[in-house]
Length: 167
Image (cartoon, rainbow, N blue to C red; front, side, top):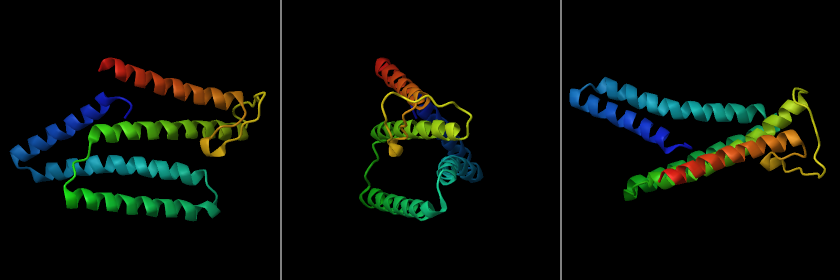
């Protein structure tokens, strides 16, 4: 989602195949294409929840289930509003917002990944001169974790800068 070209290419692929299937009258092809488009999104969601569950304790499962249920309820309400009132989803704004959410998620997961690798004694631990411990952001007082998260910020900044210069 960082690159609009990727989203545009996926959209063009879907649109091109939909047009071909509608012209030829092969509804099985259209059904298969719909399945692939939805399956891709479901697969990403399953990977996210699998990662979340492996980092959680059994006591936290109910919170994850509650979050999932609330998310489904919110999506149902949004879907109902969109269908009922025929509101057109502003795709550009949607992708812009999700890009920032994905950045935040990658920032947090990078910090937690480095911490997990340090706990497994795969990555060394070099402490910072100051003590920072923001678990909800994945920030710990180690040079390795902070450096990895700064790299995430740099990559995100590069793509944002590149995107603004292409306009």
